[in-house]
Image (cartoon, rainbow, N blue to C red; front, top):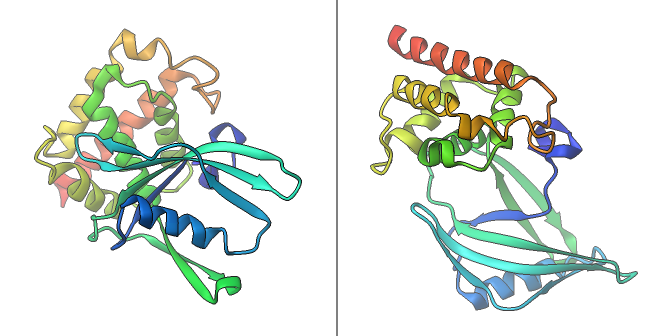
Length: 226
């Protein structure tokens, strides 16, 4: 979200990557880190401790704790979560980095705004009022109101990520609207939305909720009208 909004309040230190046709074995990950250290950018990446297995309902991967060290010995500790990309029907932006130092290159696929929106939405739909990812609601508002979303693309991503997932109850946009309306009526959920550390847009919570619901309702009408 930081790259889309340019807001320091949406900057994050943690990294998330999905490998494509590349092993998640520990030795493969170590080899990947070694390749990054061969670039010659005066930043060294050190693996700290043991790699951890990550397993959630629809996600499996590895968590690698790393330390970034520069030539002045300044360092930052962070974590790198690595999964496997398997949603090949999704369109993503392709970024290519030319790494002359190792006579090679890296192709990096970036999640589209539509995929970012949908994955955050899927998490909220699953967890309901128990969700603690409060900033996501304001991310929805930002993406909706800053012309970051293509409605036709968004509906396609909904189909792939939400409607085709047998673990999800929602089968239509109308189902999503009903679920969100229920979540947003929960005082338990709304209690933490006004916290300044969560409301990075400094916009009244009721305005944000109304805007998100209106957008989803309009999406539902668009589907009906097709």
